[in-house]
Image (tube, rainbow, N blue to C red):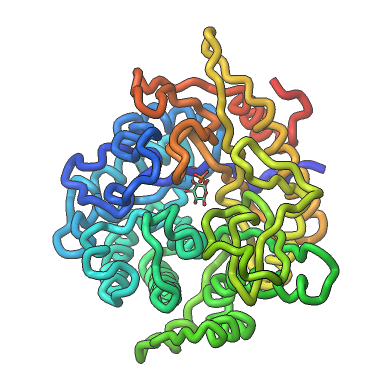
Length: 464
Ligand code: BGP
């Protein structure tokens, strides 16, 4: 079976992980520029892949790759250096040039409004704990919809609010107390509702979707209590977010979790109506892995909190504890690989929301090697992508309305907390953690493989 001709092929990046130029042309600092680093041996985001200065070259390569969409995020602090207040015209102009460059090659931009990089000035007033941040976000979203809405039709709201809150230490560099975390959840989701509303009001034919990271949660055994554990973690990690986006409500399992944790959420007068009147046009989903949990039985054996995206790092006493799934392999960075889980995730998601789905992240982080003659033989990435795409086809055949695939990542970028050595791109960026070299771009084997796939709408059998 082939993919339909209308299926959208893309590639994804985020601003802070690629752009660099972290203080150029009036940009303000963001929480990603200031967050305390646990490992100073790895690259920071100050120069990253220097996409800010290489965007023309990078987009030309993406055109050669053949993608129809390019998912990137706008750095809010380039548009509003202080998060709100005066607009920075250089920031507006920069993304205008990026959009023009995409359109020159017939590539549709798919823009994420915010990808982990909240302006520091807003963090200084409490970040997402303060409703002022919602007001600032509304104004920022309105500004970019007005600036680019006549050219950009695909929009994404806030990248992975679920992972950002669950893995706060790794992504934001600080742990948010539980009560505050779930008030932030509410504010993030309300901000998203404003984005749906404003996009529909301001962008003619505009389409907008939420972009959570979805990892289906399996029970470790058929014990009823392990199944309960999976139910709660599925709700807290996945459905609480999408139920808010797509149904406009808190789901009952999540409400019970909050009640048992003694957490109460403060609503503002406008929230109820906003939640129930504004919905997305599609769901964008980032998928890397699945999770497996059991009901925890021994408090002494548990350390606190959720430390990473992997099962083994999940601990929530009374609810769930992550375990290794013995049936699945792992990548070099200990992330579980579960292509069949992608099919089940797509089916579960489609059955729940009945909205078209696009995958906006999926990919393999690996320590690629550049050979002396400028090649990167990343067969392991091709294998990973092939296996996941086969499951996309199976999901489509089973009735899921999956309309596009935009893997992570277009070019090599700085991983959230594992530097440049953890590479995801189709395009290799020649730098090390500490040495910038020339930042030259090279096409990996996966580049040619993906190019062929896009040309034929069929998963190529050959690897090179
Ligand atoms: C997602 C984020 C991305 C990206 C990816 C891989 O959660 O949206 O920004 O980085 O995960 O994660 P990592 O960089 O930790 O390997």
